[in-house]
Amino acid sequence: MKPRALKTLVREEIDRLIGKNHTLSRQSQGVSKVLSSRDGSRNLSEGLKYHLKNRVPLSENVYRPGTKEFFGLVNEARRLWVEGKYAATEEEYEIFESDLGKWAMHEGRMVPLDFPMWDEGLNESFADHYGDQHGEWIELSHDDLADNPEVYDEVFSIIDQSYAYVGGHANYKSAGDVRTSDTAVFALIDVDDDREVDAVRMNKRTEFGLKSIASATDGSQEAKSKLKDRIGKELTSQGYYAEVSDAAAAVALKKGAPPISSERVVRTILGGKDIEWHGKHPDGKFPGTYGWYTRAIGGDPHTKIMVGLPNVGNLDEAKYKGRTVKLGKAGASKSGGRAHVFVRDPKTGNIRKVSFGSSMPDAMGSGPKAKARRKSFGERHGCADKTDKTKGGYWACRTTKLFGRNIPGWW
Image 1 (cartoon, rainbow, N blue to C red):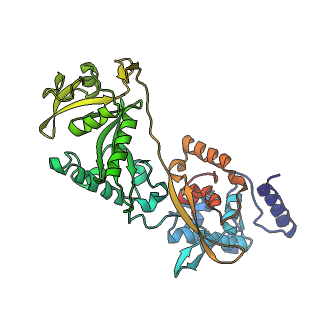
Image 2 (image 1 turned 180 degrees about the vertical axis):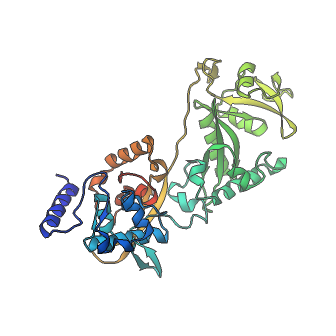
Image 3 (image 1 turned 60 degrees about the vertical axis):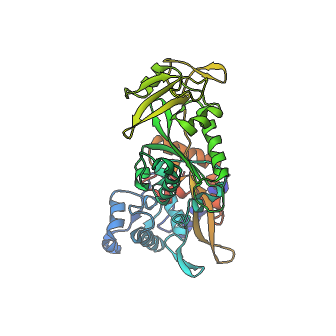
């Protein structure tokens, strides 16, 4: 028998013997219950009344996590539970036994206990949040960056620097433009000690795959090298493609990106945009490559070539390293983040800060995909057996519940 199951059985037997009214309920819909109004239910807060009336367990707290009302509701229900006026579900029992809703002093300031929080200092730099992946490319979406808008400032800074020689990027004149862009995947990397983004690759999603819409570095040789390798990896992978010219074209072609030489394919992908097809470069540059065309961008003509392996089905084929390849599908990954929680060490009574990886971005929500992610995570990590609050694994298993709303079950 698993330790958690044994603990539950012992707890239920003790409750039965001493006749407590807050006996543990294992029913999935086992919603908490308070004694009659003559016992004080008339004095309940509106929040608790809502939970009782709608049979919503406290583990699905109606208030936003971290607010005064959120903690107040937990403490109110705990008080009634201690008085024997509240029958708790299994998840509520765990909440009431914890220190959630309580505060303690840690390193000179008051901190909430047993309440996970995103790592502090994110407003300082990109690496404050993703420093554990220093030197590695990290793929993020707008959803990932929603709580970290300062990263957009760092991205724009190096875009502005990289495109300064042509008067700036045609589409990105501010950090706000980056934030509202149709970018599906931001590939970011920090390679030095300044803790800020040093290179970026932005891709938007189209019906033909992921199209590169911007690339930039801070100008350092290491960042440039990393970006060139990234460009080569993307543009020789199924479903990635780009329109390039000049220096960017030289990098892509040198890294093995196959040029798309079919005018029909290029015109189809560009969706009717007005282009002048050349085939060979009109100025004689890049001898041996075919597929050049000129089109207006920002009111100015630009000579470009499309490279990579876009998803065009049976529309055409492409040459890659001397062989014919079929064009298929592509995808992009999404990373989670780091979080922390303050806990009271049961052995010493001291307050500790426990850091852990959080899969919250991929596991929030009540949809079938989110439920499947939580279930898979719980099974892989043995969440049912994690009982030590001083370990990161305990909190990684519970982060979706404490950060989320209306999410049934811990995992």
